[in-house]
Image (cartoon, rainbow, N blue to C red; front, side, top):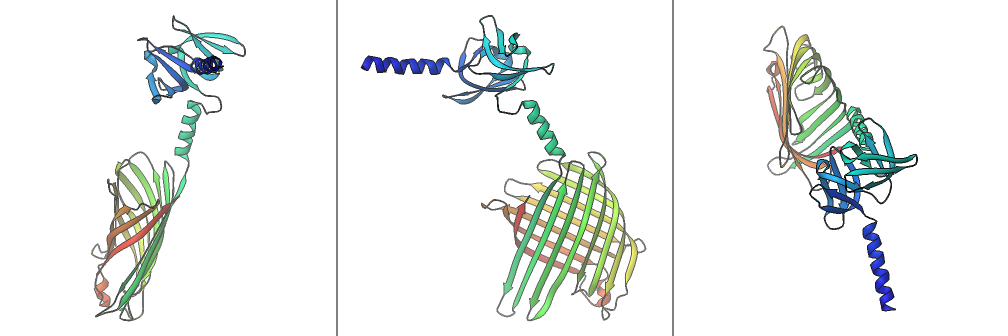
Length: 351
């Protein structure tokens, strides 16, 4: 009885070994496992002893499979069947229409039944690159202070981006509110849309429009609309740097007691966007300046510099930064021309 059990176990083990796919290299080495596929001149075989092993097809003399697989050739034709090899390096594929003689070097690709072919996977990847995708970002923070003075404030921003390989449509908004000793010390908001279209790898054209208000600077409404061209100095996985310039229109309406006249003038539109991915976070710089064409000394400048530090929670990060909002004509209404905001914000990114 013991001999019968031992014989049965040995037979099962022998069957398991014999049923494995086999690769024989030109040096005489034999690798047994499950051939997952052939692509880019490499054969991938899954083994019990070393996981997936990738073998250069040029170093393979023959291989065989215990089950049918798909095999394609450079001509574009493909077949399905069990592959068997011989000592002279020839291969035979047992197809439904008969036996096909070939060799390792003539096979372009192979894949398992039920899986997509490498060509199909490449095509899907290319189509995915061409597809426009939405991405979203929301940021929020609260501030407070008590003691010699009492203050509390909040700020929030939102950005939605639809991007493809050749163009980008972006909607953005931000708002900032603060009270110090029961008096407003910050109350401003802005929103806008920006569209960029690539002419080639470096050059692009854009149109943008932005509007908002600033109660502290007595600005009831401001509108900036512009169009022009941009140039991309760098666009890699870790760095993006783009500058732009164009013509625009500035409209600014002020409160009755501000002492400033309504502004309606043609302007220049100059901007810079820089993103740098670091090992520990991401650095982002945005600068925009809009001087009037009639008087270059009359301009608005907005700058935002921030560092995003990722959190363990997926899609969340902490943003540390500062923003400057400069109005060269603010002194006409007795206001400071520069407002600087320092912030720490919780940011959520999703798509």
